[in-house]
Length: 338
Image 1 (tube, rainbow, N blue to C red):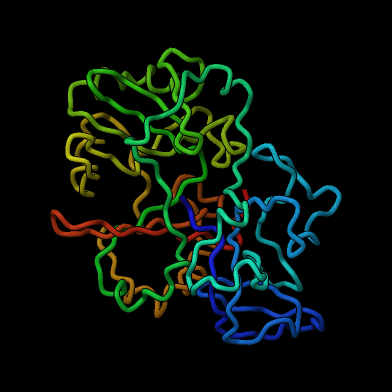
Image 2 (image 1 turned 60 degrees about the horizontal axis):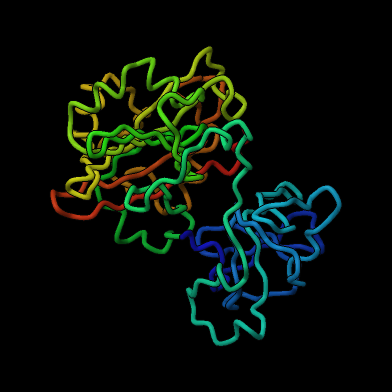
């Protein structure tokens, strides 16, 4: 479960040019606009990440519940937290004071559940819900990468590692799996399963390219990737048809992800495309001098799929020796707009 609300300390407070009532709080790798004079550097606060759904009822975020901003989600009324710009400064997340109920919480404590916060997801189209046949089993992994801003303090341990860097595509995360001689299709975010014959883009594409026949000739595995095209995310890349790009392959028999080289080899064998690679062996200290610098570097970079479009972000995965756990995180361009 994603840690959406955690106790943290404010690193520093920075004035905002032309602003008398607000200032910028630095919280780890995050920049948040806060009321001027409400906090000081070193204060322990609660930081709430973007993409959080804030249910109505807590006075600390009631000021966000304005007409036209309130939404329904998860059977509740509340506010979906997104980045906002104030006086030309981008604010990502929400800083609130620690209340009486959280007064005994230690630094770094996860308060997501106790505050009733969940990750906000745009509702799935009704036509998808109508043809779903169930939910994906929890032994099937889903992708949920940590945001760079949450690991900014780990710079010293990460800066000399070798990383695979790929473009983060703006689409729908889809998983194709072969397990016990059965082919399955699921949408990763919702964990909904679909029958191969369902008339939806992910299933139509799998049948079109003959994926069930190809994957059935290999081992038990899950192929994870991004589906993009005409009716997905506003067809951000301007495609005439649907395309699927692999970003991971999970070996169900071994319980681990394939290495970069094996992933590429299997995708090539199956006739599948790989997400655009930025660097196959990057060292962070050769790119930037700190993790937060990556947010600046990614801004303005164009997508390899459509040079007229800004890139959504980058995905970083270590290239560990065999048997060692892979580390990974994502960098989202602060200015990205779909």
